[in-house]
Structure formats: structure tokens, C-alpha cells
Image (cartoon, rainbow, N blue to C red; front, side, top):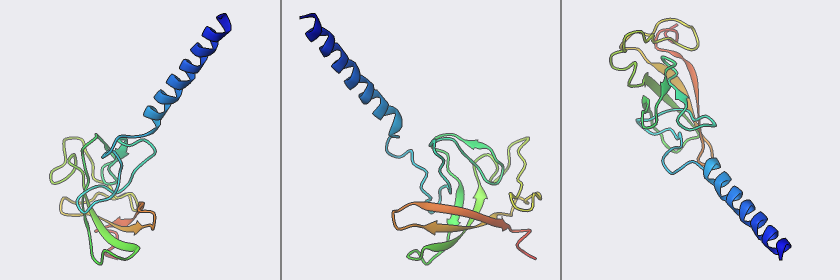
Length: 138
């Protein structure tokens, strides 16, 4: 009888551990970091820990990047511009510096990042910043 109770307890513990590990691994719906016409560019392994490429400020859940994706929509490589996040666009918060990740120069208030948006066949998206409006002039 003791072995039966011990075996039942082990089974219950295994089921509980597998249930809780699945809750931790799977993010809830809407927490993914897919690029949208007005939303952000990248997603990391931990959704919700995305940083703005303009000011390098971590974004909270629900905060999006302000960006534009240009047509045509059915190609695997699109041009897009990234203006910034709520912390740095349209007016930067005190202490926030808008800096280009390529040339490391200051981006003006009316400036933006120029990037390429890659749409993969499995509905994943990847953004590669190629420069800012200042360093791409040359």
C-alpha cells in the first residue's frame, strides 16, 4: 500500500512540474514582438525586454516603436524608417539621447533610422538598421 501511495505522489509531482514549466515557456498571446506598420522592429528571447534602437531605452509591455514600412508588401525585403519610441519621439525625455547605432552621431528631432525589414516565409520578421537620416545622406 505504501508503494502505491508513493507512486501516486510521484506521478502528481511530475504532472504538476510539467504543467508549470509549460506556463513559463509559452508567452501569452499578444506579447510577441512582430513588426507592424506602426509597431516595433525586433523581438528578443524574452518578450517585453526590447530596447529602442534610437535611444537604447528598454520598452515596457505595450509600448511600441513608431515606424513606417513602405510598399510593396508582398516582397521579402522592404524599406522602413524608425522614428523612435515614446521615450524619444516626438520629444525626448530629459536625459535621453537619440544616437545612430551605425555612425554613433546624434539624430536630430526630425531625423530617423533607415532599416530593412525582412519577411520570412514562416511569418517571422527581422529588421536590420543600415544608418540614420544623417549618415545615409552621403
